[in-house]
Image 1 (cartoon, helix red, strand yellow):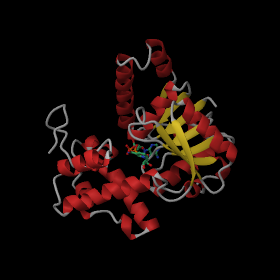
Image 2 (cartoon, protein in one colour):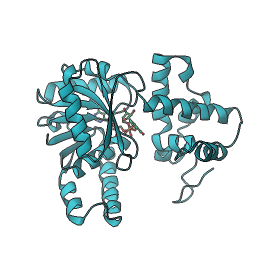
Image 3 (tube, protein in one colour):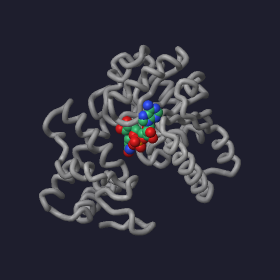
Image 4 (cartoon, helix red, strand yellow):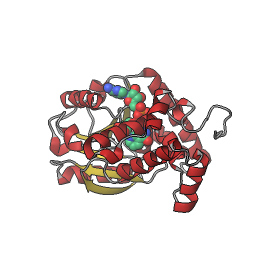
Length: 289
Ligand SMILES: NC(=O)c1ccc[n+]([C@@H]2O[C@H](COP(=O)([O-])OP(=O)(O)OC[C@H]3O[C@@H](n4cnc5c(N)ncnc54)[C@H](O)[C@@H]3O)[C@@H](O)[C@H]2O)c1
């Protein structure tokens, strides 16, 4: 495997492109939105600089990895020589379906398809194309260049060869893997959505401030981040999408907290919009409010 195309250059796609390029793959990062591609390129340069200054990459390694990266807004040509496509477009069935239909039409017949969905069924996503044996979920975590795990989720018809090939690719990207079978929410998103949603219900009930709830969870339960710090990083809209999906598939206990819905309606999407549960606009250091 040599050529990877990453579709969607948002929070996750740019990170997946980074670890793929550092892993020695030839990578094309695709987005329909030119300004998203420009932001991705700028952020990737910042990550390369930080990796250099922290000694995680040598000058030579950084130059090599940068030369492995290309950017494109034309999906059909970007997948024409791909060995593996990793899809990281928003968690909406209609968008994923449209992307997989294009992939099926333009990618080589032996190209593997992976989705970075947080919750959706890889079997259902595979049905948007015509190669269910070659389709799988590769669930990366945010921030991709720092988080060690890729959760690999097999759909109903995913072949052993596909699972093994993407596991090897993830390892070449420097990641640990778990390979599990499909069920809505997998292992990590189900637990994370429940904990994060419960925290919003607590905030709504006036149990404590976000700082107090985060501190209780971090110091009392030994979580590295509080649920509000985490949702600001993940994106409140992404969390709400996940909860809506899990609510539909698994029932009442995943019903999104009304306060979370209200924050999303207000445009408080987390770090990416400058304000989520906390406010990031006041100075460069995170101002918590
Ligand atoms: N944010 C997280 O922490 C996180 C963690 C794990 C998995 N995920 C999953 O990863 C996927 C992407 O999430 P994200 O947070 O990076 O989203 P995002 O909104 O930051 O980025 C999505 C990008 O896809 C682009 N896009 C939309 N339609 C497209 C198309 N047809 N072709 C090409 N590009 C298109 C958008 O312009 C945008 O730049 C989702 O399925 C999400 O559930 C997210």
